[in-house]
Length: 127
Image 1 (cartoon, one colour):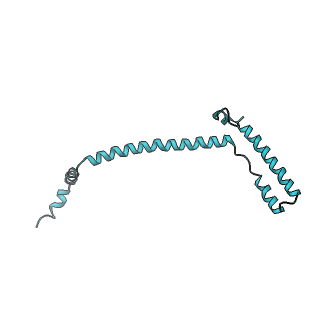
Image 2: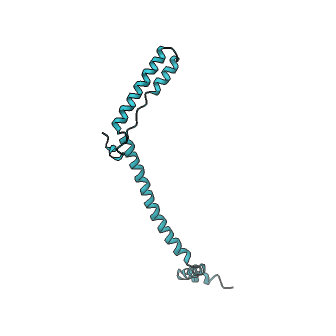
Image 3: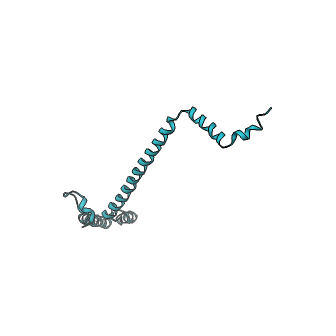
């Protein structure tokens, strides 16, 4: 029994039942294919083509469950990081947008003066 069988409803096929059913169907198909070959109702090329198609294997239920878990984990992590980024960006944008442009202009002039801009302009503003 596959460990992923604990997640399926009680009326569903288990992994072992699914595998046995698939093998039974493959055997029936191969027997009918060989009957058609013996009756010469298909060409050898068609027979080989159909025989090659029977070589497919059944996907592992456990591997599919692990892959689904990993995809869900990545999606959940993306949701969490996206929510955090969205919340921080929204808070910063609301603070940025709540300050009027006049305050930004006054702040820029004050920074210019504080950094020594007046001394730089002193010689240039004389006529």
